[in-house]
Amino acid sequence: MYTDMNKDELLKLKTETEEKYAQLCAKGLKLDMSRGKPGADQLDLSIEMLTHCIDGDCVSLDGIDCRNYGILDGIREAKELCMPMLGVGKDEIIIGGNSSLQLMYDTIARAMLLGVLGGDKPWSKNPTVKFLCPAPGYDRHFAICESMGIEMITVPYKSDGPDMDVVEKLVAEDELIKGIWCVPMYSNPEGITYSDEVVKRFANLSPKAKDFRIFWDNAYCVHHLTDTPDTLLNLLEEAKKTGKQDMVFMFTSTSKISFPGGGLSVIGASAANIEYMKSQMTYQTIGYDKLNQLRHARFFKDFDGIKAHMEKHRAIVEPKFNTVLDMLDKEIAPLGFGSWHKPNGGYFVSFNGLKGTAKRTVELCKQAGVVLTGAGATFPYGKDPEDRNIRIAPTYPTTDELYAAMEVFVTAVKLAAIETLV
Image (cartoon, rainbow, N blue to C red; front, side, top):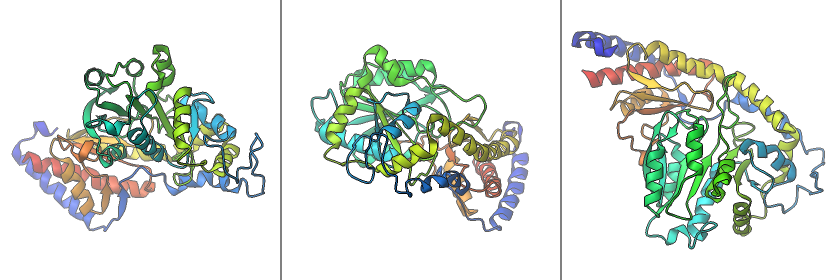
């Protein structure tokens, strides 16, 4: 452990690490681990989907010609396929295009311009709009807020989700707080799944703003990596028990199940919320891609088909996560230069180095040919107050590329830590 080393020992380790780093730089690597993208072998798992509908059979179970206009909220087959992902009913779901991020952006944009169910005016008519942002979190959530001038308030994470004492206090005191971002299962990037207690406290929030909304981005609801996956309480059902179901907007997608560039996105909410959103959306679109909805329904058949498909993903992804975690356990844990959570699913490993080392680590990796998500990206405004957190995305590189990238990463972590200490 570095805490047991004297200065001479640290300087010796620094020299050894610099030599290792120079050797890695000489390899001329060009590896990108900046985003959580599926690898090509994962995309190949769904290639057969593209053969559906080319025989000319484009009619849904309800007799809808999916080549034509209409059906704003999605065909029945697609709804039935995706309803179990969020645990919602047929009147509590809208099937969108390929991006749940677009659905979230549009939902906030409509709230800003038109307001939400139960609100007395559009959000933009307030002096300012504020959002709670548990962090480390998803950088694109924060980018949506920043692009619309929404003030972000950082909420710390605990081992079972956001600090609910902070959340409850803030929403009860400030009517300008209109929402909160949540990635409740295998959270991006921490890999934490919210406990039952946290979900129940969300369902029982008493915000001062009557048009407050919980943006529940359940992106990784079927992305398990173990035989004992995490479980997540159904927020909408819990909110129904408290009579606060209109407070909940839930999102997911098949982006990392089928094709990120050609999947289905989903929003789930109370039946009243869905009707209200449809009344607003009718001016925005006549309907999303129903042929794609039909292809997905025919390829997967049902939710059991999705779960079986995700086992194929797991066979590809789990060894990559093990490569990352094994390298961290072997090279970083004995020195005490960082900490991390071993996730049971999701797409990321969240690494916390010594205070003041994240930017330097990312810079060293880049110089050695490995591109990571920018340090600070997992916090509002891109500012990690302790400069510690780095998001590792293991899925896109091949296993060999990932091993090479992690060699660079652990060496950079060591070098940045030693530089700070000496």
